[in-house]
Image (cartoon, rainbow, N blue to C red; front, side):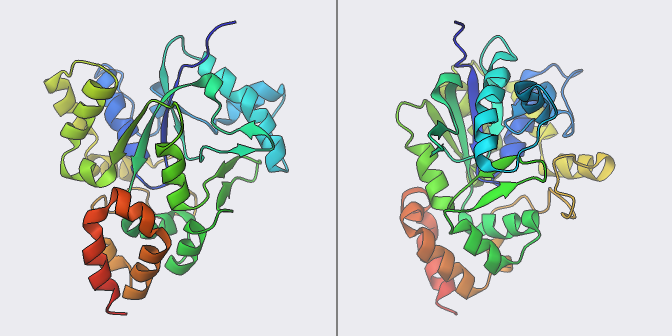
Length: 289
């Protein structure tokens, strides 16, 4: 049997920079004449909720009324996705690494490695709220709930769980070759971050002119321009725009002291591990509640 451990997961909690990383890598690896815009990223990579793969896995148009149905079809769909390219390739996911109904949501038998894109929960919360068309307090509740699940009306599910559990599950998955990217580090120096991914993790010698081109094409200004001119197929229908701010530290304008305090309390352990530099400032901000 062919080895299907070909998927390199591009994993993240929603609104953590996954699309940005995909655009950067697409513009680096693909010829300029074939580099995709934001609506044709599937030329370079794909996602684990591609309905056409689920249709093929089921043998008819896919729909599911329960998560158990979805999980069972997902296993077949992921094998088709893994086999869709002869070598290692990137697949986007927002799912947490867990077992449901005695099924691995991220199956080892199709997994080669993972890149995990992380964003601090203070900036993530307002962005995720816009993504879900929800208010900030409701969004904090969702990000703090083990039952946090995104779903479509066709029965496509993305079990997220708590933000801290999502981070912990991916970054401590046993035996998984993993590279972690922080959104904030991408903001500060995208070329440096992607260079590290290519050289240290993928063992690819970096072509500096190609990397500079990719960084320019994937700039937030460029992404906003494309969305304005072309729209963005992955944007939820209720969401005004997908590429909104693209900066670190906007939580100071978007959150109240009480909300900052609640996020600190919920996720303190993970913040201490991955964002220790934010603890003092957010503590001082929250004290104004």
